Image 1 (tube, one colour):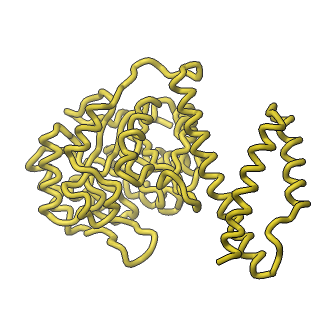
Image 2 (cartoon, rainbow, N blue to C red; image 1 turned 90 degrees about the vertical axis):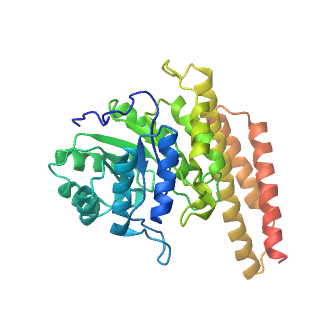
Image 3 (cartoon, rainbow, N blue to C red; image 1 turned 180 degrees about the vertical axis):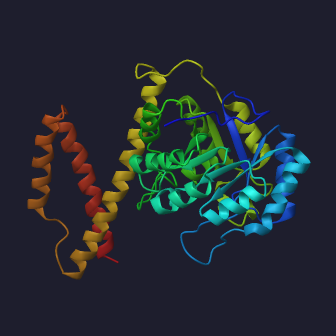
Length: 353
């Protein structure tokens, strides 16, 4: 891909480049109050969701073009640059007409090549930064395909937003980080700027600070953080928004390491361990969900919970696999005994309901 700088005049090239503002543009007062507070803290780029694609109908899907004059007022009064999400060619047209400086394509849109191509065609000949969020599912080729579609339309000022990946099961994060995917994207395209979206990865405001630090440790270029003057009263995603004051505090605590992280670096290795542990937790949650479904099936068909042959088969199978993986068979036996015991407990709980 042919890439050019996404930097804007007056915005520092130092990490992190920060894009902050509310998940959704709600009212003129909310927009202006948030923007003034962010500008007072030295922020240069204001984000606001004009159109909000929702998983189900009935939720707040954005104020629409009514909110664009409020965004223009932000720029006029504070001098901040403006950023918003677009999902259709019409969105692109309205955003450009309103003088929006940065556009981003959301995760649901990235997953649809037809939608991405429509946006790429609408942006042909436009010279502003375009950021692309990863698709909902962990498909790096689909993500790269979106960049290529924009690049083929002559858009060279491109950047990525890592917002994590959806999962059916209960988990620590709203969207799984799966850091190895943006790392692979960086390996393939070393000059592509990558932003982290800790708001959507964490889903909870208390996770924004640690996720932001992880992103900086992995040499991400910037952060896009949902910031609201009154987060608890937000019309969408209230739990993952923070105040401008809290944002300023989080940014003040970030440690920006200049040296290149390598696999020999202890902190990098510990981060890999943390990611493995998070994955283990999430996979265990998935396994227990399936165990509960099995418990329901056994209850409906009047079957016993404990089936010894199946248990012995599991221990034999994974005992043999342990040797092939260089793991101690007694250790693996203890692990699967504990997992089986919890599975039985959950099934008994279902049957006794």
